[in-house]
Length: 215
Image 1 (cartoon, rainbow, N blue to C red):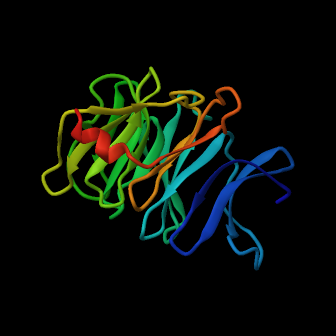
Image 2: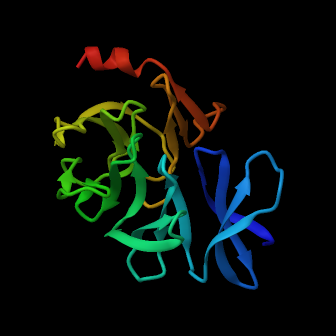
């Protein structure tokens, strides 16, 4: 494998997964995060595959754009096979690996993974780039006007609250541009933003919980 060029996800065992190119053919490869050892090929032969997330038990979510419309697919590291999960993009496992949030034409949806249940609408309209809080009880997403929105989620009942805007971002693109923000364990956000004047293109929001109390 010669050139890493798009997409990345880090597994629980610190394996760094990215897209490589070999003889004009895309591969999903796992690279030891510490640089030791050799990379190994997980998936070979597709085009426009973007790894999105790992589950705690070793399932890789990736976006496959080669089918015309983007699909969220799941690769099982144990069974070494790929299963199509949904028509959509930007898949993210819940922290316990039991739910998958993703972007679809209807907005942000959540579906159970490996247990029965139907689709649950998270966004009240269009939305993209879903992320989970570390306790699995909130889902965040970006609205079309680049606002960061939070929705409470009960993983036991599969029920959701009313979407609420946290703050306006200067995020590069609101949808289908891979993830441009992340949520830290302490609830802070790291956001890739357009620069404004001489400010940094990276924005760290640390007081968003206080802003919720004012709404």
